[in-house]
Structure formats: C-alpha cells, structure tokens
Amino acid sequence: MNDIFEGLVAAALLVVTLDADLVDITLRSLQVTMTALVVASAIAIPLGTWLAIRRFRYRRVVIAVMNALMGLPPVVVGLIVYILLSRAGPFGVLGLLFTPTAMIIAQVIIITPLIASITHQAMRDLWAEYHDLLISLNTNRRQRIAALVWDGRRTLLTASLAGFGRAIGEVGAIMIVGGNIENATRVLTTAIALETGKGDFALALGLGFVLIALALVVNLSIHWLSRTEREGRW
Amino acid sequence: MVSQLFPVTVKDVEVHRRGARLIGPVDLTLENRGITVVLGPNGAGKTTLLRAMHGIERINGGSVIWAVPPEVARLKQAYVFQTPIMMRRSVADNLAYPLKLRGAPKAEIADQVALWAERIGLADALGRSAPQLSGGEKQKLALARALVASPDVLFLDEPCANLDGRSMREIEALLIGARDAGVGILMTTHDLGQCKRLAEDIVFIIKGRVHETGAAAAFLEGPRTAEAKAFLRGDIIE
Ligand SMILES: Nc1ncnc2c1ncn2[C@@H]1O[C@H](COP(=O)(O)OP(=O)(O)OP(=O)(O)O)[C@@H](O)[C@H]1O
Ligand SMILES: [Mg+2]
Image (cartoon, rainbow over the protein chains, first blue to last red):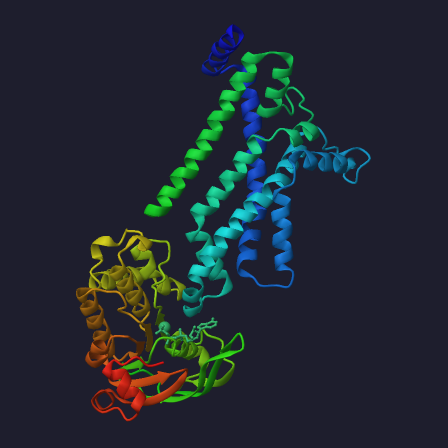
C-alpha cells in the first residue's frame, strides 16, 4: 500500500518537474503516433469516402475486408510486420526493423481500417441525405466529394481522433517491431510495460498519467466535436 | 423573363421499380402558364412524376422533352424536396451553394445571399446552422436556395406540408413572386385550398396515370370524371 502511495507521489513529481526521460518518451510517442495518424488518414479518408459514393463490382467485398481488418489483433499485425521487415523478409534490405518507421508502419496498418470504416459510415449517411439535392444541382463527382468531406469534416476529425486513441495506447505490435530500445524506439506504452516489469512504479505511473491525460484530451475533443456538430459552430 | 424551356412534352414515360409500374405511360404537354398543380391521392405517383420530369428518377420508357437541349434544360431547373434537405452548414452557406457551383463572383453571391435571406425573413439568422432551423424556416430556406440561381422551372413537392398558416402564406407569396417573374412552377399539394389559390393548370393523376388535365378553374368547378368529382368532394378514393 505504502509502495503504491510513494510511487504515486514520485510519479506526480516526475510529471511536474518535466523529467527528461518522461518528456523524451512522451515526445517520441507523439511523433510516432502523429505520423502514423497523418499517413493513415491520408489513406483512410479518401478510401472511406470513395467506398461510400462509388458503386463498383467488389464494393461489398472491400467493405467486408475493411471491417474484418479492423478486428485484427495488433500483436498479429506486429508479427506480420516483423516478418516482412526482418533481415530475411521481403523488405529486409531496407533495414527498418527496430526503428520508429517500423512502429509507424504497424500503427498505420492497425488504425487505417478503423478510420476508413468510420469515414465510410459517416460519408454513406451523409451521401444518403444529400444525394437527391446534389444530383438535382447537377454537381460533378469532384463537387460531390468536396461537399461531403467539407460538411462531414467534424465526423472525419472524430474518426481520426479515434485512430489516434487506438494507436497511442497500443503496445503489442510496436513492442515487437520497435524492440523498445532506449532513446530510439521506447514509447509510452512499451516503457510502462518495461518499468512495471522492473518494479519502477514511479516512472511507470508517471508515464501512465501522461497516457491517461492524452486519452482524456482525445475523448473530450470527440465530445466537443459532436457538440459543435449539433450546434453547427464551425 | 419568359422561360425558354416550355413547352415540355412528357411522352409515354414509365417508371418501374422492383417489377412494379409506379407511373405510366404518362403523356402530357405543358406550356408555361404559371403554376401547374399535380393533384392525386397518396401513392398516385405525383412525386415520381415530378422527379422523372426533373431527370432525377431513372425512367424505364418514354422521354421528357424540353424546348431546349437536355443539358441546357437541366441547368435551368430547380427542385424543392418534400422534406427539405439542409446542408450541414450555415443558412448563408446553404443559400450560396448553388451560386458557388456555378462559379459566380463573390460579390454577386454576397448580394444574392443577403437579398434572399431578407426575403425569407432569415436575415438575422445567416450564421445559424441550417439543420437547426424550424420546419417552416427550413422549407423557406430550401425554396430560396432553389430560386437563388434563377431557374426557369421550379419543381415543388408538397411545399407546405405540416406548416402553419403564417409559413404557408409566406411561401405562397414567394411562389407568386417567382411566377410573376416568369418562372414556370410545377408543384404537388394535398391542400385543395392552396390549389385553388395558386393553380393555373391542374394535372390530376390516379394510379400513375394522368386522369384529367386542364385549366384549374374549369377543373375545380366542374371536373369531368367521376374520380375527380369524388376527389374534390373529399371522398376516399384509391
Ligand atoms: N423507390 C421505390 N421503390 C418502390 N416503390 C416506390 C419507390 N418510390 C415510390 N414507390 C411507390 O410508388 C408509388 C408512387 O409513389 P409517389 O411517391 O410518387 O406517390 P405520391 O403521389 O407522391 O404520394 P404522396 O401523396 O404520398 O406523396 C407509391 O405506391 C410508392 O409506394
Ligand atoms: Mg409524394
């Protein structure tokens, strides 16, 4: 009991004094996840929108695959990326294993289906709502997509935030492909796992606080977005 | 301004969905005589006919021929849907949208938005989110958004369903204004009073076929067919 209390105090101290290790790990986490988020959104948002408004032959199959990929266990994603990037694997020559790039790749694979799926649902609903009007107004495809993406911008941001939340808290895949190397690939979640194993609860809890704070910010943002959506403030 | 689009000829038009014939074959020629009201019981095919004429409902036979080529005709039409479709943007941005699509200059868009907002009594609500408006405000905004790009033909599907007297009066005033400016109007309504107030011509349809057409006064005074008589009496007909 005392251990835990002391750990909490020490953790709080680490946070308020902006401990160098803690800041370093947090920034690396943000850098990896933000990069993954940008890449994943750049793929997922156009893909989801396209699936919502284009009718083509294997559309349902693509949607089913996308939804199935959303349920992929991250650890398995890590394993697959590891195999692909390992020295003997097809991309071994790139030497990416145990680098932040490898972690970014894994996170992109994990969150792209999630963002694409949310985007698809949102764009599909909005398209159903706008369909008659946009057809009646003689819009071309580019104008339709522009209208949907612009008017659905809050939902798209929500989708991205959901992706961020999933990526920042993920541990299995990036542990495997990043290797949790100090000053190189150690991020919030992998550091927590390691420090907990070592029994250094202070640093683990401090990192945990940061992670919780990030998750809270994300969820509050999603909540705030849905409110502005209703009130149409931007 | 007199519309270049008339006369419009509807020739043997049929619309089928899931093996059932929703309307047709419909034959109809309309001159621009102001406001034409499509009357008929629920499910008669009024909405389907309007959509087919506007070109947003795929037709399975026949053709709709305007006096100008189809691409031109299409750009000169506007349609107000039975349930107004509000874009998730401000009132001002909803009004501006059709003009933006046409690449109108910014200054002109601003002028038109201000003008139409004033006409529909939403000048103080330009920044409000359109989906948050009341039913009557939405209907007026949808109508203004249809008129802002100065169409030659305006389609209206039940423009006053579920509206109170005041909103209805405001909308009818806008319609009369548009008609007097030369816009040809084709509308449906369930309100015989409204039909009497507005219609120059009537198209009466039952079960997807045109049953009777003609000048409104003549039709309302002395319908020729038993079905039309029953409909005007307020009898239940199918
Ligand atoms: N997409 C569709 N698929 C199948 N049936 C349809 C479809 N759209 C309309 N219908 C049917 O076609 C018929 C005509 O519909 P329509 O909406 O044109 O009638 P309406 O005269 O406008 O009726 P109301 O007065 O209720 O608005 C109805 O029986 C309706 O159920
Ligand atoms: Mg209808």
